[in-house]
Image 1 (cartoon, rainbow, N blue to C red):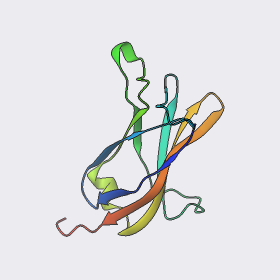
Image 2: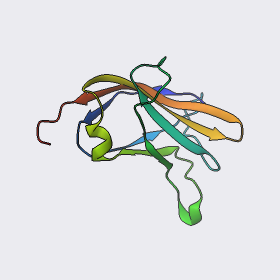
Image 3: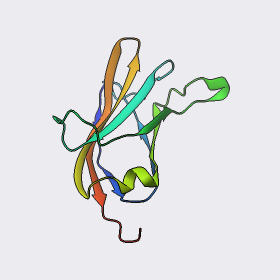
Image 4: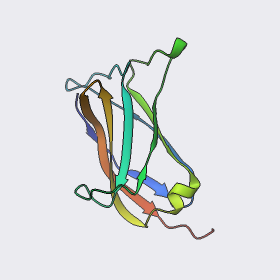
Length: 117
């Protein structure tokens, strides 16, 4: 599997959701059947403590079978985004199958400030 780099824009104090797509090293869409997914936002890649964990799920098809499309939904509540600091943060998303953990996406999270609270 391979990961892509993509930046996210999050409005502080607003509900956030996006869908990302995982690809293998040949550029094909991942089959995520039987995988779990997790994603975190941190100040930087080397900081041990996460600021927030995404609610992350693999899109499922008929009868709960995962699509071969590699689609993963990420979301944060308005309360979670309100607690984020304004500026540039880092994130990544990993899928797990058994003991195999693979990063499918990483990048910068730009948090824009909230005025109305």
